[in-house]
Length: 77
Image 1 (spheres, rainbow, N blue to C red):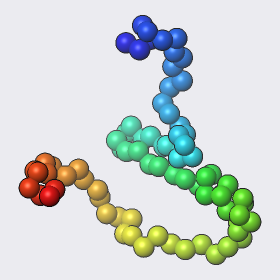
Image 2: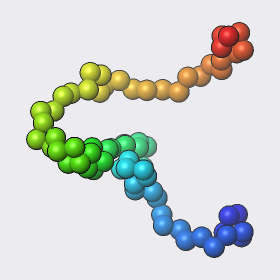
Image 3: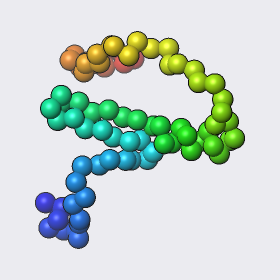
Image 4: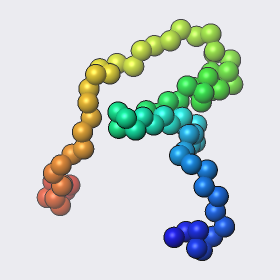
């Protein structure tokens, strides 16, 4: 519908947005987000590219699922 109002060009699926690389896998029905390029750019900018890495303290096997219950106003207050 937007093409009816604006001159648009379809560039396909988004690959990069605000420094976040996006990797789609339709067969697995998954989306992976990476910030490798952005992180390397920041490390280079502050001249700490050769610093020692530190692992993120979270289990990477955790499967995140949407919260199925809606919050009500009493829970928010």
